[in-house]
Image 1 (cartoon, rainbow, N blue to C red):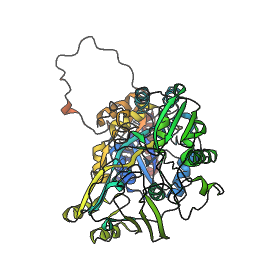
Image 2 (cartoon, rainbow, N blue to C red):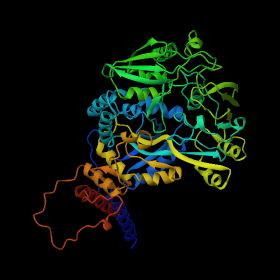
Image 3 (tube, helix red, strand yellow):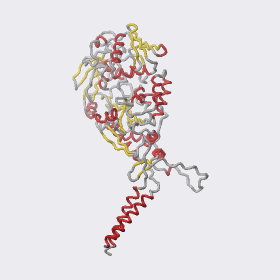
Image 4 (cartoon, rainbow, N blue to C red):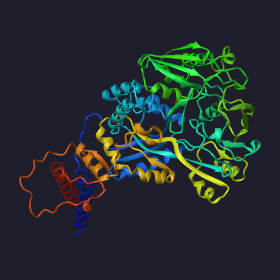
Length: 598
């Protein structure tokens, strides 16, 4: 019996080895065609300090795991993440948010192949010749209906591309209840495109009591209307200066410093007629010289917000003291919209004529509804009502005080105590229940400026069927609920109704259907590897000719029998490999047994 026990042990070892090795040989993995990964495993970069997109990435990763797609979140600071996605393109995928404006140009151009370069806006590297052609046509569309035709087709094509929109977040603003007569627009009560609230809101019939105090998380960075890029600075500049044309509450272009305009030469010439009752804060009148100077300096120096206009404007000329002519390189319906949405403000020529483009502008002089009063850097800014403003009866606010309060909870407490009236940006969703219980506060919810999305590197993965499957695997309603506590609106196309109205293609839609996602992945050639918990490429399934007659006893598949669990690989084990392993193990066992008997 002394030789039997070792034999039993060796047989047991053989059985254990066989049970491990056999499943390993059950999947015959193959090399996929270019543009597809061998294994559906992706690294997804995310910013930890931007909770909307970071939390959304967590939820998406969990949802994709249910269809056999593994996502590994890698959280990086912006100084590390931005160069990887914008310049070196060293990534599989990432989660982020892009700010929205009523002008669709920025979102459309982000899918043009010319922008798929370091420093361009097509971070995901999307390339499609038909889309390029449609974008070029959209930029020179002659009417809104023509623009809509191109925009809808673009959205339809790129909806199966590497850019996957998730939701537009909602702006939560908590304001003292005594304030009234504000205007609700996408972006919030006091967003830079919303000129109306701060013109007409008030809390008292006594002008001296209408002091509006607002909390900023940080100080502004600039008072230079050419060079400022941060939204805090632009918010202040927007109150000190005026644009040539503006937007009404429905995002339609309306006259502002220009009281009217004419379109000539088949859309290649725009003539603007200026108001004659507008004065700068130092008392000097606004004339065509100021408008021509502003656009020549802005476009000539290629400053950020004038750059988009450069693609349309060929020249800007003075016709007379109150008439300005813009000659375009090509007709475009988008010219006026770009003029209204690019935050370009008319500056006084007599102040700026001898100043460099990056001048600090310490005491701004504009034509806006408020005048510069004082500033304590890092602490506060005070603006006062412009009594000579050309909009009669406005503004009703006598003084605006900007206070810098870095912490979100501290800003909220300041609002509760009546030390400030509201804060510049959206409040934390977790503060809403407490605010709703306070009779002295109002909670106002509007669409925010952020479109939260995930994107894949099209330079590495360019089979659009893969992105179609991912779209079906994402439950956007659940993403909104878990990522932003329900304060968001699911979106499926690159343009959305909150910001782009009828230009948003509402026919683009992906239902949450993980079973369909699995079917698409399997049709590509992926199968679920239960051992690794991920889809691997095994090659497209064989084409089975249709049966001449289905067996009568075969029950029909019903939706109730479907499951969202990834289908396990059902291919037969590789018999040759297993047989070889079996022979080797048996020979080894016999050899060991004979050696022990000696």
